[in-house]
Length: 294
Image (cartoon, rainbow, N blue to C red; front, side, top):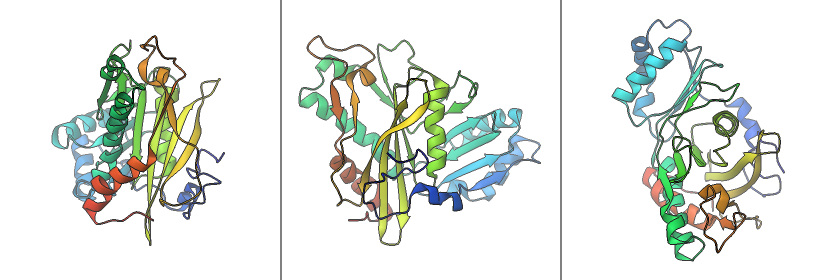
């Protein structure tokens, strides 16, 4: 299995550079070290052109004062409600993502997967109706060293019977302008910082290549010590390549114990990667004039 920093299966045959190479192409950063107010910070962000971009809109604000960060979140909520935010207090970092069609495509894919599991009998009607899917509600972490950190996911999936409805069971995070390293930090925040209610995190990462767009999907969970780790990953683009093991959730991951007597919590719910490719291509890449690697 490849390193969590890699984001690329070692045996996948993917004709792209591993995420380790992104150490040389880091996330776009703006320092707020000398900024005295949230209004001043917002002017700087506006001047960077961030709010005018779409596909590649991801920025990391560094050296952010605690009080300014809180006020800035309120300002952005008011003026730019579509922006998805991550606040990492210990690191004094605030991340901003302007979601595009490509960011939203995996959300649509998960909705389709849920319907497919219901249609083919893997989920009963009651199990299906108990799953709640929403975009980007803000969640606050309670476990150190992430205590107080806040994050808005690309997709938030929980169950109506969950004792912690304000915390997801499954999270999807999508990156285009965002590096793998940053996506991995998001996964760690969810799995280690938010708590045991978060069972799995799906990371979807795209890479712009000369010949087209490549992409990968990773499934993350926790090991026996509670540490986040990558369970498995799979190729999205290029389409053609070696056979790869399916990525799946278990019923217990999704349903929080609200499982029909006819099934087991360990029953697998496999994802259809072919469907993911189709949705990303039609809903995302085609709309912005990009093509996937064949």
